[in-house]
Length: 112
Length: 115
Image (cartoon, rainbow over all chains, first blue to last red; front, side, top):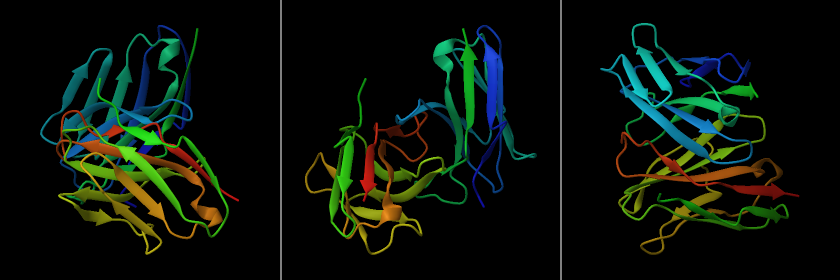
């Protein structure tokens, strides 16, 4: 399978805490993307990190990429109840024609 | 904020019937995609479309499926003879580039139920 796989499958934290989700993948990539999905809704793009980048920030999000370990992490700092959602990593795998491989996602629950 | 619009939001159809799912991608985007998500499972790629032709299709995208961009704004997915296992959430997406910093913009999806 070329898909990314997120870990943990579920994460439950209190508001204000940090949430860290991990993603592992199998093939060489030129970028890795993180998406969020609220229950029953579409996917929302959060951040893209390229293979020559090690870390990237966007607001309360911090993404790292370790191509030697074929892994990425998404950190959400100072989480809010509104961050409750499923988070997916997606990789192009070997495709150069638009196909993204999604993992099963991490279900994040943030309690007020 | 530009959006990808999908209609209908819900579609119930009988097995064997044809369905057309409609999408209006973001106007200046060049690449268009269909993905699906069976309940409780991963989001799966179906097809990518660029320059009025299919760029790539997955193993799922067999002869029962087709896509079309009939005019400058709409992008449709047709399932010719639906099966029970086609029941899923279907997402349309678009992007300006294949590796844009903005990633892909997804619509809210069409929930297809085949009975």
